[in-house]
Image (tube, rainbow, N blue to C red; front, top):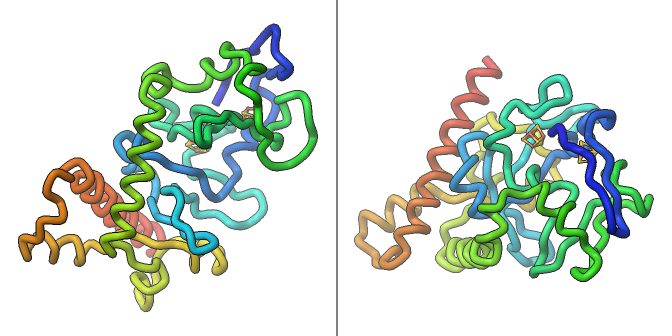
Length: 235
Ligand code: SF4
Ligand code: SF4
């Protein structure tokens, strides 16, 4: 995640990433969007998270929960999947929510505040040079559409009962990642059998939703790949 210095005319300034030890790669979860699903699904396990009775976004998770654990793709403080890294990594320390832009105050090289958590940046104050350096032009052009579609996709899966609690689906299988127990309770995954049964029964759920079906298939395939990888590594 090496980056160059960003300059001028902003209430925020950003140093380079060289001396921080890749702090932003130490988290055990990151947010995902349909942009990620299309590009990087094979790299991460993908789930839905329900908090306060609300299903909001799709997430990628890392395995670790102990101090010092980090993203499995971090090598010598550099991202080994740089070209395929998720949007959250591309844009960090910036993020969007409802077309507002935030920055993470846990990044030590954004200078302005020591508070933890996210801090809102008023649109008029942001220096586009900072933000544009962190996200692809491709994403900037499509971001509203991507965000809208991502929300619609999550709603579609939830309303059509395609999700199953993570704990229930993996109960007794003695595999999978060492998520914190409290986190596991909030996790849902797509139930492959439900999707298969729906397709076999000829239910017209996916009519006009071929795009969602292709996304669901990718998620299920990734789920299986990651299970295989995990089983191999724990033998
Ligand atoms: S936490 Fe900030 S300074 Fe450190 S690697 Fe990430 S973006 Fe760069
Ligand atoms: S994918 Fe790369 S940039 Fe993202 S958390 Fe992992 S190592 Fe860091």
